[in-house]
Amino acid sequence: MSTRLVPRCFDAAWDEDTKAWHLVLEDLSESHTAPTAWPLPPTMAQCETILRALARFNAAWWDNRRLGVSIGTWIDPATYAQRLQGFAAHFTAFADRVGDRLSGERRDLYRRVRDAAPRLFARYHSHRNVTLIHGDAHVWNVLMPKDEQSGDVRLFDWDTWRIGVASSDLAYMMAMHWYPDLRRRRERPLLDRYHAALLAQGVGGYDRRALDDDYRLSVLLQILTPVLQATYDIPPWIWWNNLERILLAVDDLGCRELLG
Image 1 (tube, helix red, strand yellow):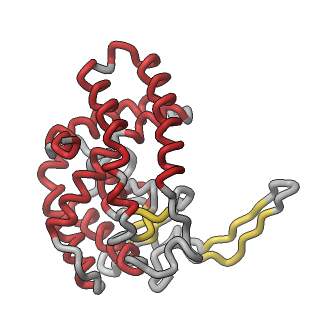
Image 2 (cartoon, rainbow, N blue to C red):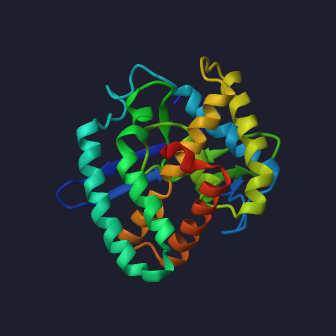
């Protein structure tokens, strides 16, 4: 890490036989705090600070030659195809579980995304304009500095980090977790600020239109997330609200156009 964006780790140990482990991190309780009490969204100023921190992190790994070599692993098209087959089974079980609470039109959307998946995931397989992503980038996985002027944001809970398209984290943070009124007011200004922060950190060859295109694609693909959350026994009061919000975002942003 070229910049301090995570809690400092003093020691870590793991025993494969006993499964015993420990992790010693710096104590940030005096200097940092959660942005809000879940599920209250942060203020606009807090969101801007968080997105600038994400941009610094993304820019540090943007098209880094170590990606897929010593940092992270590329998922090849064949593996994606296998995962898609697994998702199809998960969706069948999910649809049976929710019954008529999931409309025929929404079921059809999932089928169309499944059928178009090889083309939709071509963006990832291009291996261009990619970086490391957090994978669970909701705002409650962020510690905000109590000194608001310091900008010393810390990102934590990296269990699902991977190589990917940066807009995946942005779509998860905003489109998945915000209801339409707030999202419509904040989405574009925050994407503007995120893109400006990328450029300020030296990212080139990635214009504002490219971010919009990636963001819409990421919003569309995020409809898979609530299904997987339900599959892994995350409580319905989380995945049901996520499902409703992300499908509303798909409608708002015209994401069905990406399906042809």
